[in-house]
Amino acid sequence: MNNNFMEVKFKSESVNEGFARVCVAAFCVQLNPTVDELSDIKTAVSEAVTNCVVHAYPKHNGVITLTCEIEHNTVKISVSDEGVGIKDINKAREPFFTTKPGDERSGMGFAVMESFMDKVEVVKNKLKGTTVTLYKQIAGEVEQVVGG
Image 1 (cartoon, rainbow, N blue to C red):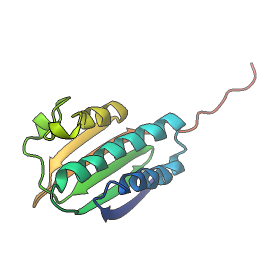
Image 2: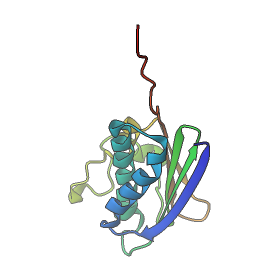
Image 3: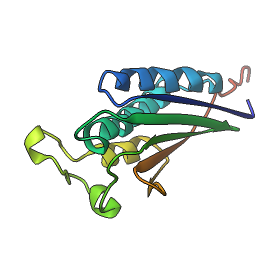
Image 4: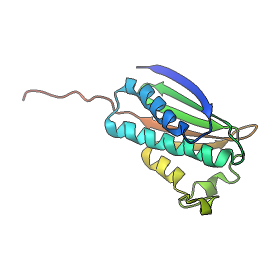
């Protein structure tokens, strides 16, 4: 598979976190990922979408845009919102930092994303909101050498 892409938009409700996981997993199957690779991607997507649901739209629901691109054997997943944005991206990426300590938030979302993906980028959108972009190289099927 050389290049492919998809984009979906959905309401920033917690029930849609599972939808986002399944959507990205189904799209990535074309690369023949291992179970572990697929699990890593689903976990990172869950964290990114949950951040949008919890932090981007604190007083109302908004829209989350999920894009997924495949180029050769690399998956690029972007989770974008038009919410309140992140005041200090570097601070937000520190383990255990949370803006909602009373809500049982662990502050580990970005650390989890970084541990499961090859690269994580966090940028402020031009007008408002945030985009988190996740990158994962998929090893694909390895040929077995028979004989000897």
